[in-house]
Image (cartoon, rainbow, N blue to C red):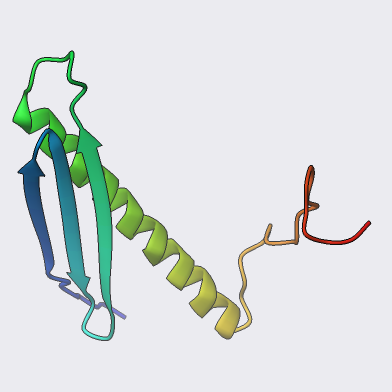
Length: 99
């Protein structure tokens, strides 16, 4: 079964006071997702705006990718094909549970 899908993506970058913010919007036709990323220039470093753009955009896309993976995991679980390795982990250190 051959299938082709196209999902529009929009990436917006804004920079103010040495901080670059990125927002990436994805429309799958059935869902809309938004990823966010941020990069801050160290005051001691040379200000190279393209580096901030690259870092913030990459972080926003990484955030979006994580959301897509979590949605796929959820959808797989919904059809009885949950991915392995999602057992509950033991909490270490301070917890809110009484001893």
